[in-house]
Image 1 (spheres, rainbow, N blue to C red):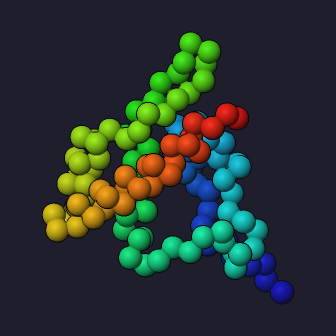
Image 2 (cartoon, rainbow, N blue to C red; image 1 turned 90 degrees about the vertical axis):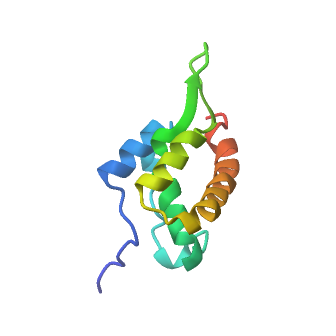
Image 3 (cartoon, rainbow, N blue to C red; image 1 turned 180 degrees about the vertical axis):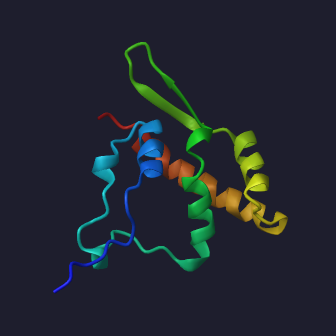
Length: 115
């Protein structure tokens, strides 16, 4: 019997991006059973999620005097430039940007939680 294939792999780019966001890439491994994902990604959200995951260099962050990394949010000028540079059609930019802001609001408490 063949081992179930994982739907995604943790490659070096993913590891680098996770580390840049202050996350432990080893704690972000996909679940061992790909049929039991904790979320469903609808096809209409793939474009926005793909774009969001490529924005790791656009997070505004700073270390506190105590050494804690704090995330403030995305640099919207950088996000706007990325929308153009990644070829997101002009007609889709407002919708993708709105989706990115929704994901940003959800990500900030997770990124800034005490570890």
